[in-house]
Image (cartoon, one colour):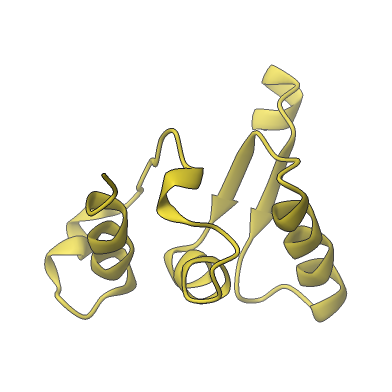
Length: 88
């Protein structure tokens, strides 16, 4: 809906994607040709931050749904937030 309402260059990244879809999204991330990346917390952490495709300073804003999960130390929300908050 973001793409339709705003005309921003938007893609989604989530764990249940097939490999071909994931490869297309990862290529767009590598090209830095996105305005908005909508991702599940695990996909963001595992496919982007751990693999260094995106560094925390790649973001100008991070919106987190279900942020109450971030209080769990081992949850990927917490790990993503730990990385992002340490950007100087």
